[in-house]
Length: 227
Image 1 (spheres, rainbow, N blue to C red):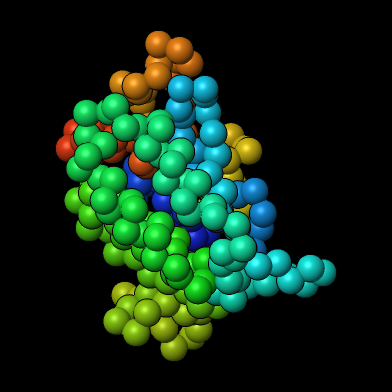
Image 2: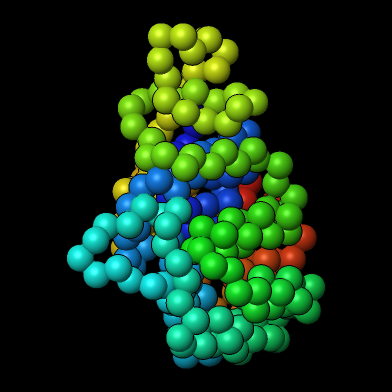
C-alpha cells in the first residue's frame, strides 16, 4: 500500500516515521485547502509549554481552493515569529546549532505558494533524517483505491494501465490530523528525551524540528524504534 497524504508544513515526527516505513508516498496538492491542520501548522514545546506555529495564507473567502493554488501571506511577520519561537524552544538543545541555519534559510525564503514552502520543509527534514522515500506529487485530486505510478509521475488508473504501474493506496488525507487520534496505519514515535520534559512531561506528535534538535543523528533510529 502506498500512503496518500496531504501536504504538510515541516510535519510531525510521525509523518517521517511513516515515510521511513514506505519506499514511496503520494502528496495530493489537488485537494481542497483545510484550516487548522498539518497543512499550515507544526507543533513545538518551549519553556511555557506546547505551541503551534501556523503559516498565514491569502484567503479567498467563500471559495474552496485547491492546495496548489493557495498563496502565502506576508502581511504579518509569521516566519520571523516562527524563527523566534524555535530559537526560544531549542536554543539550548544539543543539536540546535546543526539545524537552525537550514530552518532559517527556508523560513526567510519568501515562497509564493503554500505547497512550495511545504515541499521545501519536507525535503529539508528528509535530508536531516537521510530518508530516501520517493515523493510523488499529484496536481490532481486523487480518487479511488488505486493509482498509476511510473516515470511519468502519478495519475488515475484506467484499463490501459500496466500491472507494474498500478498501486493500491491507503488514504490518510482526512485521518492524519493534529486534532484527531493517529490513524491505525500510522505508528506513534516512542517517547524520547525532550529538553523541557522536566516541566511538561513528554509531549507526543511534535514537529520533526523537536525530534532532530533533541536527538540529532539518533533521530533516524528513533523513527524505527519499536518496529
